[in-house]
Each structure stands twice: as C-alpha cells, then as structure tokens.
Image 1 (cartoon, rainbow, N blue to C red):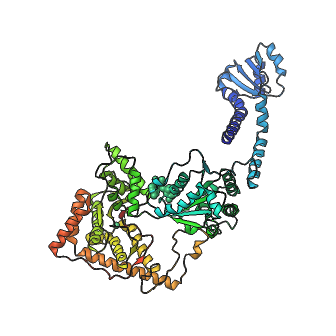
Image 2: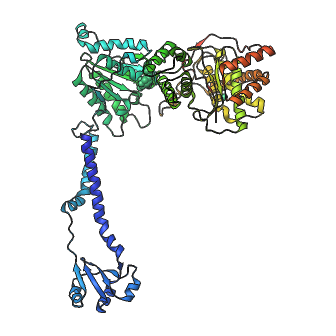
Image 3: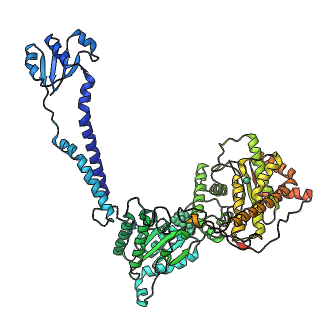
Length: 640
Ligand code: ADP
Ligand code: MG
Ligand code: ZN
C-alpha cells in the first residue's frame, strides 16, 4: 500500500516535470522553425512598400507573410517572416489602413495549476529531500519512515510447508532442533520447570548443506509464525536504517509469539567489529550493536526463538557467540555416503527414473557434494532427459549431471586444432597414468578431452572410493605428483610446455604449502602452524594478522615447498618416462574417442603392466595420518 502511494508520487513528479519543460521550450521553438527572422527596420520598410500580406501580433513577436519578391528570395520559409519589436501595436493602424490582414493572438491560456506547480516545483523538491534525510538521520523511529521497517518476510498463513522429511541426512542437527520444536509447541511445559531454552541457535556449515532448509523445516514442524530475513537486508547505504530494522523486527515478533525469527547469512551484519575500513562507527557496526541489545533484552520464556545461519563462523563477532546470545551451535556437515543417498531419495521423489537408477550408486559417485549440488544435478539430468525426448531420467543423464556439477557443461562447439588437441590428450593421459600407477590414489573415473565449463579444455576425473577425512603424508605427495604429471607429460612428449597446467600448479603448491605450514609435515620446519589459515583478506583486520613468522622462516617455508614440489615432480617424470609407449597408446584412443572410461583405462594399463612386467611404484613411506579439513577437490582440469 505504502509502496503504491510512493510510486504514484514519483509518477506525478515526473509528469509535472515533463509538462513544465514542454511549456517552457516548445512555443518559441515552434514559431522559430516555421518563420525566418528579419530586422524590425526591414519590416517597417516592407510595410511602407506595401509588401506585407498578413500580420499576427503576439505581444512583441510578429510573424507574418510578405509578397515582396526580394524578401521571399531571402527567406528560407518562403513568404513567412518573423520580427521582434517594442510596442508593435502602434503599427496596427497603419497596417490595417494598407489592407494587411491583422490578427491578434489571444493571451496565452496557461492552466493555472500547471503554472503554480512549475513555479513551486523546485521548492517542493527541496522540502521533500530535506524531510527524507531528516527522517533517516534520526534513526528512523518516526512514523513517516518506511525504510526503518524490517524487511523480514512474515509467514503466517502461508507458512513453509517444509518438514523434517524434506531434509535428509544431518540427523544430529535435526535431533538438536527437536528440543526447540518441543519448546515452541508447548512453552508452558518448559516454563513450569523453569528450564531455559537457548535464545539463539546458530547453524554453521558450508554453503548448500541445507541450513536455510532446516530453519524452514523447524517452522514447518512447530507450526508457528516464521520471520525470515537475510543479514544483508539490514545493511543499507542509509545511515541508521539497519539498527531501526532490527528494532522493528523484534518489536513485530512480539505480536506473534511463539514464533521463530530466522536471520540467514548473519555474517553480513555480524562480522567482527573493527574489521573493515571506515573507522569504528560504521553503519554495520551500529546494526550489530542493536542486534546485541535486542538479544540481551528479550525474555526467553515468552516464546521467540532466534535462528541464524552462516557459512563463515570464523568472521563473526565474538560478542554474538557469547552465552545468552547465539550460544547453541549446530553444525550442518557435508553429507556422508548415507546422507547423500537419502538426499538423492528426497529429490527423486517427484520425478520419474529408469529402473536401473539407484540412489546408493549415485551417492557413491558423489563424495564431497552437498544437498544443493545434488538437487542441482538431478535437475540437470531431468532437463537433459527432456531434451532427449525421454519419459524417464536414465543413468546416462545423471552421469552427465554429475559431471556438469563438477566441471561445468560440455562445450562441443569449441573448436580446438589438432595440435592443441594432441597436447591436451597427452596432458590428461599423464594425469591418468600417474594416478593409476601411484598406490593409494583415488581411482580414475574418466578421461575426457571435450571442453567443459569455463576454460577447461580437458579433464581427468578421479572419484574417491569413499568419504575421506584423513590423508597421510604419502597420499598428499601422491596427489601433488598426479597434479604435476600433466605438465610432465607435455614436457616429455613435446619437449615444450604450455599454459594449460596453471591450475594444476596452483593446487599442487597449495597442498605443499598446507603440508609445511599447517600440517607439520616438514622436518625442517617442524610441528608448528604458521600464518593465518584464512585466505580471504578482509580489509583492515587480516592484513596485519596474516603472517606470524619471520622473514627467515618465510624463506625456509618457500625452500621446503620447492623441495616437496621438486621431488614429486621427479617422481612423476620417472613414472612417465618409463611408460612412454603406454602414453602413446592411451592418447591414440583418446584422440579417436575423446572420452575413455575408468574401466577401459584399467584394462589398457593392466595389460601393459603384465606385458612389460612393471611393478607398482612406492612413493614415500607413511607417516602418521593427519586430519585435513578442506581437502582440495580432485579433478585435473586443463585450463586455457
Ligand atoms: P544453505 O542455506 O546451507 O546454503 P540451502 O538450505 O539453501 O543451503 O539448500 C539449498 C537447496 O539444496 C535446498 O533448497 C534443498 O533443495 C537442497 N538441500 C540442501 N541440503 C539438503 C538436505 N540435507 N536434504 C534435502 N535437500 C537439501
Ligand atoms: Mg542459505
Ligand atoms: Zn592438468
């Protein structure tokens, strides 16, 4: 309603602007276009000579028509001329006496309100702007201020119909939320016992793991009003709006208790105070302060539950996480094998699949993917099936869907010349052979030289057999060797190297750096964690924290990284040098067919090993296993 009025006002102003502009400019211009100007003295001369046929009098402007041949010759518009003079009415008598047709234009019939508004318009504009800014500056408490309203969407009758059945996996999270649901359903039970239910629940987890979905499911299960707002809704250019919105949100929620307030992506407002440029008193900080005030102020027995979600808990202000605020933390993990299988089942419910499609197989093919990825890949598969005019989604489409999610869509239209194709084929073959030969590496699922996604010209897809949480030192070294082997293959075969290994090198270096600085896997550096693990740089805060070691150590780290990379590189070179003919035969097939499946590759390599009596290679003796949290993903892309 308020929106409509605001828009109407805007249109009115626009219309007025146009009208007044037309009014101001149109009349004189129109006249000038059709008539040519002559001087007043010339006009008087022509009048005396009896050359004027018609005259119009418009105040001081006098358009007319002449019969003079010379004048007509001079004028572009033929007979029509225009002149300006003072007190022109004096010539009227003379003109009429000479037989000139004289017309006098009626005084302009300006509409009075247009006149009024055009004269008032600038004033109105100024007054409007003044009101606008005054309102915002005063913290938005005023009645006029629609900006201070919280943007929260309130779901009352159209509450989310999502229930826990729609959220698969994450059983621990569901269990913890169960308590909240019980409280929302019958708060009296808790009140009677004097039990305090957590005020604020913070859900943590990678993007796409289903945090938003879970919050909606809680509302659906408890069947209570649900205020949903995104952290970025509080952050506006206008000063004071964010804090006002927080106040308004909490005030409104009081009318609907018991209810849930859900703040999605809370990191947008909840970022550590003092971070960022612009001093200690910026808009976001005020908003956060207001949020803290409201958190402290609200009474936890009357039935408002606050749920927030973030995928960056590390950048949240510690004050938000203190007891009495968002003190209950629920981690929503990436789904494991069983979780993925269940998520597949949830999203397969309303679609038709070929009989050979099994959620279990798909789950095994997709380690590392989260719920959002799975939903996305099933949708991709459904789209493909529709494009192929099928009435059921088959395994082929799902395989393609998985690859699309992992590496982007195929780009067959991209033309690659034969020489480049050969280089790409050898590069990918290099990855595949080393991955196959080094013990304990993830099996190669597919090699392809069909371009995909942004700039990937070819890729080797390795799929782990199971979910991994621990990596040993030797496995990490193997991984680096595999990453480097594309470049090595190029070097061996073509005696030259291309830019295609940039992504491989970056990831190899990243693993090596992690081994040295975070995992204590370098003897020289020892068991210390060096540097700040955070890789994103937030202006202001992290720059100074990024490095907590001396130049000397920095030098040693670089040396160690180089040593690791070099030894892995040599290993890959050794493997590929002794298997040149194997690379040739695989590349030949790859160039013909563009794709080789994992089984085919196994067959070729096993046959070759049996013939040449090759043994598998031992890389490094195992050190104790060490947990790594964010394992880099495992596809090798040849980037343009
Ligand atoms: P987040 O908020 O953690 O980034 P979302 O809750 O927005 O992730 O998830 C995006 C979509 O992915 C959901 O709408 C849902 O379709 C799907 N999804 C994610 N996790 C799950 C899950 N555990 N079970 C079923 N679907 C899921
Ligand atoms: Mg979300
Ligand atoms: Zn590569």
